[in-house]
Length: 68
Image (cartoon, rainbow, N blue to C red; front, side, top):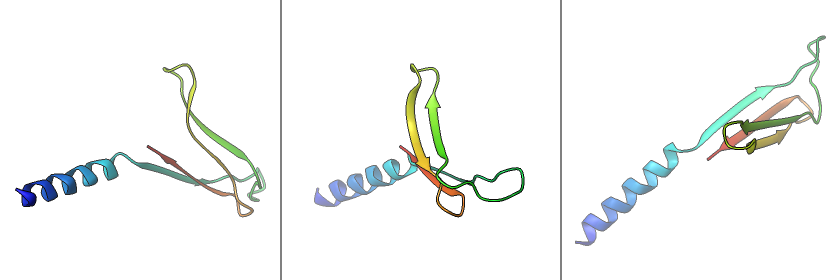
């Protein structure tokens, strides 16, 4: 019985890991220089503009947003 419970818990953990999405990118200006401290926001417009994720670009212009 405990074998089945451990298997079930392992499967649930794997399913929850698939629900995470990571979005990465780089913000640059027209001269291809990185934009520092830019605000990046992901919104769901079908649910009253609910914010799904946000980030601030780093000094090199890179950002990463994890959505659940």
